[in-house]
Image (cartoon, rainbow, N blue to C red; front, top):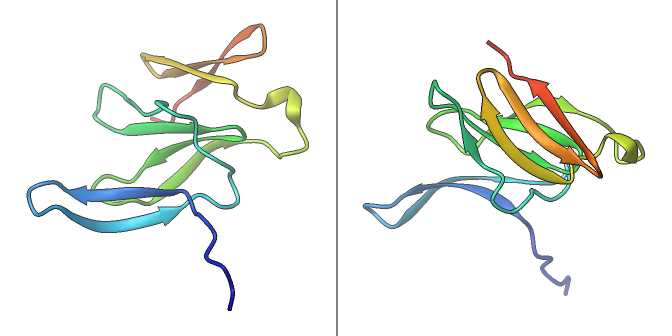
Length: 104
């Protein structure tokens, strides 16, 4: 028999019913950063993996990649999430503070 592998997923929860409404596995983008979810002024939630910035489609567990790089391009990997100021998502890459312009 095949062993079940642990899989990291983004979950859309209904807290009133204690139910999982939808899940979305993190596969091609790598693992998400802990405590990386941030909400912008419009209420859209963004998150980070080493290789991408994504936003969550409201009311779902589906992610849309806003910015990304390859696993091989380690110079552009995201190390630590920052904050959203205006339409920019700030993050750290090694000793550098960087930002990504968010879509309108």
